[in-house]
Length: 631
Image (cartoon, rainbow, N blue to C red):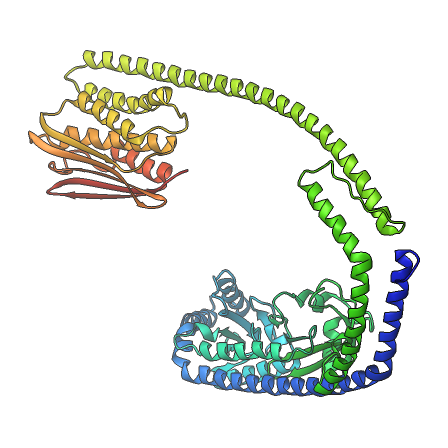
């Protein structure tokens, strides 16, 4: 057993073990490992990057073949999409030839017609001078992405001028590496302009989008297969930055546009373009997959440019990734680890006896203290750091017991204070509920007084047309009064039972109109609660429908049935159904512009935000209202 303090013993042991491992690894494994890993990783990287270049070029060429097929095979669809613009252009030419418009006015008229159009995704009308200079395009100047795009578009413009109208496929303003952008355009000699349209091939009836998706998925899988090492990155960049295929957790578009490479002072995007043009690796400071925010890690970028799509393939590798192991290197490391393991076993045995066992004993005491045995103290007595830890542990337990006693006293005081506050809040809540009930009671009483006045006027005008108006007014006021009456009597002031409210309302209206004994009504309510606003609105509608049926539907009948139903059609929608088997809505019973019908329509559309359906036939009048439930 080594003598001295625990710190000195651990220091000498760990230092000697570390020195032994460093000498062993440095003399036997380090030079061979570094050289073999670098050679093999470089070969693997070159092979992956070459494969990615070939796949990228092949995908672009296949995409161009699909593009030509789209234009040639779907020319009728392109002509149909362009038909309206062709007709507009011909109209403008006729007006210019007739002297009604100048050339510039006609061009301005075409542009003004195009600008407010609701363009579908990928479909845009545009106008250029006869030499290809842009007059208008919703996305600026899509042909100016690169020299290749400018040449392709210039050739297309010349083709249109020669043929008068032509179609082609130009990869401009694309959103994917394998995207297609069919063009159709017409040349106007009168206006000396070219008016065209670019179309997203995926929107055409016989779209080749499945082929594009296959190519797109292949390229995205290719990115994963070309990543070098644990932290390496691979991504595609389109020249117009419409699309950036990279790992989903890293957004590189803002970095490429705005950030600068500290090693060159240039924008990353400019450096990548230069590296592709020169065909040389580029030294950069880049981010890590596990640290995407900081661009501080030395790395090397290899860049390849595909001109047919103006796309760049970028592969970033790090010095930290030069850790690929071959079988030979693994065997050498295994031998070294075996030696280290034997030394480690001896060291672990010594540490367990000298350090770990006392710490485990302290841990057991700490666990018991955590379970509430605050009177427990450790008996360890040593003159090293473990002994100091044991003594401080005993002091800490004593202080903890004192602190908990003080906290218990504070908790009791705070609990008593919270109980007092809860009682005060309960008293305040009861006072407010009583006040609210009093408000409903006073409103109910005031409405009852108004209903009484209306009843007095009914007796005065009995047998006159005014009596019917007063009767309708009385039922409408009662609809509101009934809500406040039930709220005054309810236990819950925010909701009342819909079935009780509707039944009381029907009984009042029935008593008011006093129909023949052969007329019967039925009510079915399958909803447990409604908001007060919707309950009142439905009551007003029910009043209008029921009053109308009692006045007109059974004028020539002594028997009949009226049916009222409230049910759910979905989790968040309610169905209000009303029907009678009377004579139906006759032309001499008013029209749908009357007050009752106008009020029903207004309540359904403005208050309930629902849909109203009416069915008037020989079997009577049916109403169906479907509206969303309001919480």
